[in-house]
Amino acid sequence: MSAYLFLLLCSLSLCFAQKPNIVLFLTDDQDIMLGGLTPMEKTINLIMNQGVHFKNAFVTSPVCCPSRSSIITGRYVHNHGAHNNSIDGDCSSRNWQQGPETQNVAVFMKQAGYSTFYAGKYLNAYGNPAVGGVAHVPPGWNRWFGLVGNSKYYDYDVSDNGVRVHYGNTYETDYFTDVVKRTGISWIRNMSKTEPDVPLFMIIATPAPHEPATPAPQYSNRYSNMTSPRLPSWNLHSEDKHWLIRNQVVMGPKIIENSDYAFRHRWMTLLSVDDLVSEIYDTFVEAKKQDNTFFFYFSDHGFHLGEFCMPFDKRQLYEQDIRVPLMVRGPGIPKAKMLEDIALSIDLAPTFIDLAGGSVPETMDGRSLKPLLLGEAPNWRTDFLVEYFGEGLEKLGGIQTCGAINDGYGVTVCDAWNNTYHCVRSLTGSEDSIYCELDDTENFREYYDHTKDPYQLKNIVKEEDPTVIQKLTARLQVLKNCVGQTCRSNNKT
Image (cartoon, rainbow, N blue to C red; front, side, top):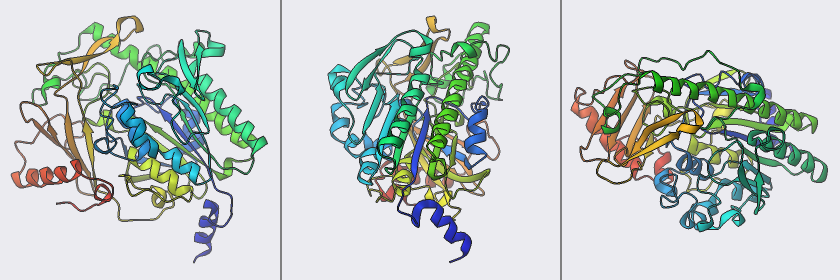
């Protein structure tokens, strides 16, 4: 064994009894393709420049509850069952609580000897009285501070270790990003005093930049003259895409104004997240724990702002919605390095358990990123599944709207029952593509070659060699039905 490798392994606590602390900063709706990291100067300096960032980080379902459920279970949506943001769709339902939630990452981290902490947004339907209300504390968490319902910045309730606590409308005491930050800082300090040798596992889940994207007052005038990036797909009406996209209309001045409003306010809220990351890190420095701590930064999915005439939202199969930031700093990780390997939302839970010295459950569909973080070169995946289950009022053209007039966003159509799809996203040295099949009355399909068309402007499914499509269809069928090891297998049909 080389001296370098020996020191590297030692730095990962393999030579010492003390296990590393692990922190996940999880944002809500933060894109990577539209400049979503631009406001994060402190975070970039503290984590990205002192660690690695993944050029090709993706979520496997681009909407909140399904993606968050994948993050904490390490499973694809078809295996954990939370198909959408509603209780009927098994978001924080009784089925979820009695099934997949019992195998969430905190359970395994606790078994590995960790004290566990969760603060912030959890699942969209969490805290609903119909499924146990705030008294339900998910298993495995020593310290629980979970938001009731969807992201808000003021006037919200949390479950504070199973007790409902209401927060009002005063910035100094109630702004949710800052409340989450203070809760985390308090816990780190308390654990450092009372149980200094116990390793810590934290998920700090901010509401930002999810709408209504209410900024802290000191940041409310930032970015006042900025507009969202005008990618080639911006405000482009496209007839070669599935029903929901074909039926969008070109945005007029008012809708464009609303979309740009959303863009600016999203960035404003992220400035408070940047403060949060910095101050949490400083608290680990204060406790002299920073050198034995892994800091992860991730978003539950991406976001679009005007692409293909969709003013703002997520839920689509396009790159803006499925690509996300992922950066990691920690012992043994090289500085300022970009990794091109595919990293997925379902990989986070296996990674945490692996770094903690635990045994990753065979039921998890994701793979530990630990070998990549250590600079190893494992036989890695070259494709993965993206799946989404659309919501609408009824099957005959039923749609769902997003936004609200009173939050400055306006209202836009963002989903429909037939916006249901499964895709195989392929990425190798020579191949960069996505092939999708819609579950609709048209049996619609989309295929994009990103090496020639990085903005997915032209659907070439009818032009591609039929044998290529046949192979992709077969591979998609495997991924749609995979469980555990068959999801992790890199064997293409």
